[in-house]
Image (cartoon, rainbow, N blue to C red):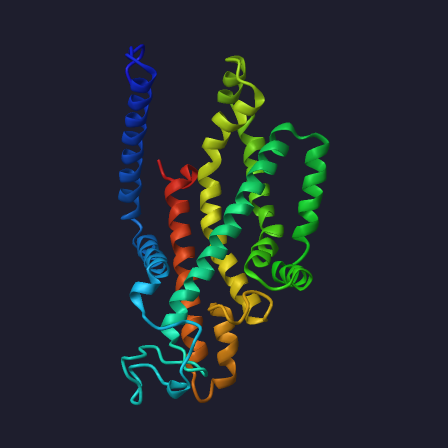
Length: 311
């Protein structure tokens, strides 16, 4: 950007700033993709995640079957590679004659939405509380930190089961149950980073320049730690999907009528000896997605965390 550049109007100035930001974004994206290509497993994980997302978005275009209504004439049909299977139902059907591939695709919508919403809300709450308590400290820091320690004492799944038993099953209640404790990890990360960063010289320089405390937090410190938050969010998303599937498996998550991977595995456990694919295929879908998210998150940590880079 040229220092002291004159603009004919505020609109022209704003347009110029947007062009500069777009150019910076393109450069950063290009550098990120170049580094991602140096991590083949992370790149593969990112591609798999993208395929899951696209399948969930364009589910009606991929399959024409109804994920809820079945046909008992096609009950427990095996997958296409089975001697008795056919390509009309590539992954077979369940006990109600519903196409398993269709239910897996629509179930991806539930898992991805739960993971994204739970992580987003948890990260927002954790970042806010961590930034405020880590910067100002004092009594508020003591209270929030002790409450976070109390929540950490409970195993996540047991805690989520208790909350769901109190709230009842349902998509919104499931997201609330996962975020009620999910913010703690983000709080602890941001609080620790904030306590470390606020002692650096650039923060003192910002204060001398006349910036208020809120501006120092939002404009100076948070941009330097947001990468760590993003990496943690990616890794926690896989864990949220596992918790959603576990609660649905126990009948405390998504209602059985809605396609969800956990409830599909639960419904198929009674047919393991006669129709193993009913429970196994949804379980494999969970395994592939969570493994891809974890591998992609590990790659992001190597790329985005400057402390892990070798000079």
